Length: 482
Image (cartoon, rainbow, N blue to C red; front, side, top):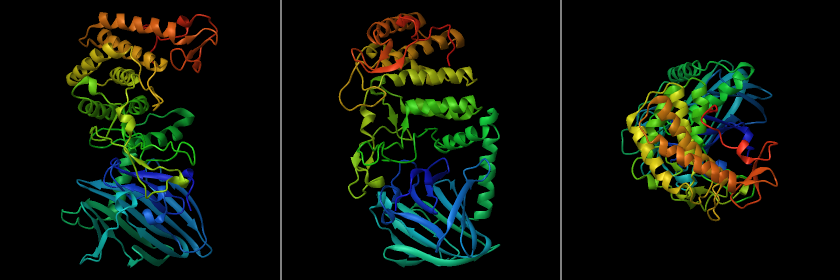
């Protein structure tokens, strides 16, 4: 039975992430990276497509919470015979990624069951299982290898691994599922208790840098931890989500793959991190951006893979029925080939804001920006696909023009305020031209609002009471940036 989205919680290791259901089932996990193939894909199908469930064998109720300011999840199960807590978290080492699960008896005695169904390639590929001399179980398909470290015996049944055990008050059982490349040596067992302590300290240390947000501090801190989990520890790329194909509407076809780095989404994430004293994340992202968009400015994409790769060919997965039968399930994203002029403005605004927050100048990053602005000067007046990523033809979207204005405005400010080299006077002329065009063609005087695209009647944002669009419009250089 499909769980509601709100019944899932996320855990991660800043390289990949898993969704853990309130029922104790890990229903989504890609190894080793956010955009790798899933080995647990029950989220978009059923248990036959891969999952790992540890829960009481009989009737039970559950509640859950994160441990302090961490991404360590604690799920408490209450049964007629006792209670038990399952602690879930993730870790990583060089070339390895781990999902760790600790089962702790908190009262009485509870009969538990574990059901492990590994299906690589988004639920398609059944692995070859073999027992290692030390008792661990190895699962292999092609380049992928998972090794199960367990204190109880799992038995193969119907192409899945199952176990039953009883845990009493005060007892602790530790389970580890580790990923590595199959052509490398089997990684040694790991100490879950030691790893748990290290991971807890790492998350708490990162969270301690947050200066607080008054009465909203707890909610903001939790959101920041989630954003941190979506930022790749090494590349600096920030993915929009850890999942693919969760539908915009149940039963509808708008099911997209969001496990990639949208320039727009990443900049919004950066605003939150920078406002919260996390400058290092902005520095990593700027390095990622410089590498990802390096090359011809004409080939700028709206999104990239987490390592900066550009190939995001979109294809449907026929064997997965989709979340609550919302098909198709899509891998990759064809919108990567769209032209969206607004991303220039978002990128420049993020870089400008980062400089305001103290991020030092980086010559290579600015040189890439100069190339982008040179190209934008040639194309800003052309139609594009817009922020809505419509697949029905390009238009002169008002929002795109305004964000092109933002791109030149922020570049001018960086020249004036931070002494970056650049043709500020030329940019000022383009900025004024965009301003005049938007006020003339992107504003409906009868409705007193901006429209979605030039000549359209759908409004995008209500204007103020003034009859003049010029007075409601774009910020001037004297206005605050935020």
